[in-house]
Image (cartoon, rainbow, N blue to C red):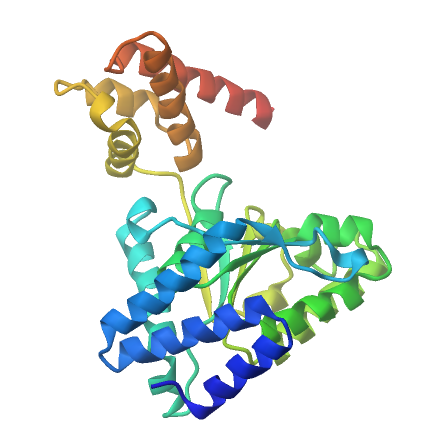
Length: 322
């Protein structure tokens, strides 16, 4: 049964013509019903909302004109099973999901669920994917903040834009991802820093510390050495990502190729050659070989063809790193 506050919120969002807020409240009711053991009703409510969202597809939050394009909203479909990372990291993400689902229980004891998470690791290792998976698992929308555009396009006004974004975090429950976070999280003592960027960082530190919403905030970076040390204290959890080991690479290959993989797959050579590739790079190589097989009219990906795709990706990465 919906609470009195939820019913009032539904009515207000309806007459205020705020569909996103309406969806958010319905999902909160669904979560509440699930906790009460009414799984069937909870699933029905989620399906109704998801069906309506799918009709509209990804969209940009209707900010004022000067903020449009800075926050992109999506309804992710990726499940936890699609995220190939280490077991300890998987368990820590599971803890985030569990605490969110049990937040009322934690609040009754004066505690808050962990919701401010810093993601650190090389490009393509699953940081952005993590935000998508968490959003899907919790039936929340993913709001991606385009940090690089926020800084470069609105120099001098960035603090004000950040305030509006954190106002949104308070009003619209969801998962918020600050990607390429080092664009605003740089060390304040760096010699090449400017006064404006120091003010931006100070504003972010203030906003994230004062934020008491139920939304989940993720910040992702592949250059942690550039981050200001004060940032780390503002996050409830810091998760470190790495390139996949042999076992993880094999899972990625099998998941991507599916029925196109040979039964007598010579995995030893492929795993050796694919060492050093990120999850995203390896998946891209597998998809390249998959497309080649389909266009060639065959139903299997040979090891030789897969190795060609893998080496092409490795060469591309080496060119980028130079």
